[in-house]
Image (cartoon, rainbow, N blue to C red; front, side, top):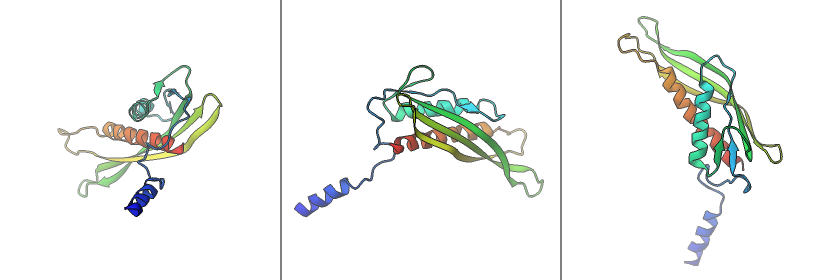
Length: 167
């Protein structure tokens, strides 16, 4: 019985944890400023989607208040570096594109506003998503926006997990 309790204690203190739950920001942090990401692409409003997704993820996974402007304990800056759509599948008979892959490159920096120290930085986060293109004009539905929406959620989940795990 004593050996089983000792084994349980050792296993519980081995360092394994659920991603995004073990690390804590410094105790004096109460607010995080997340201004709109910078868009360095010709794609309209991609930065707004990423910013909104990151804000939602921080609000759902942490207890910190998120502000878009004003005094805060930490500040998260992001940039959308590039976004590309590349054909990956073609119709064998017509040669028309039937599937595209969208690739997004972004970077982010989290700074402690009290010390001006960079506490997290990534210079190239890469996300990809595929979408289908309908050849039938009557059933055509533009899939690039839903693909971008999915990528925004993936980007936000990964970014917040990386930031939380960095501490």
